[in-house]
Length: 88
Image (cartoon, rainbow, N blue to C red; front, side):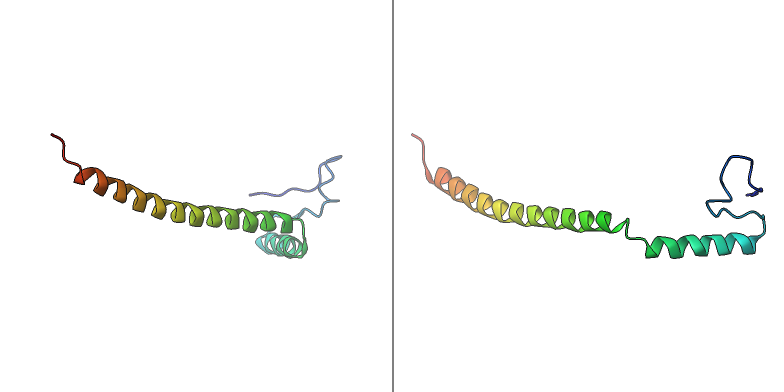
């Protein structure tokens, strides 16, 4: 990947884009971006939604498992009742 100097009007220098193509400059740029990302709270809302959504899914699976146990028990009782009936 080759990085070049700011092209007129692109504003790359204003955004803090690296100007040289050395690996040290790229590492520093990536480290700076990582620090900015970890300090930013913009993704906190996304994390909150992921946690809340996963809790809703877990509760749904739990409720479904309770419903399934009751349904299986009822179907077994119906099966036993119908199996006991003899037809003439």
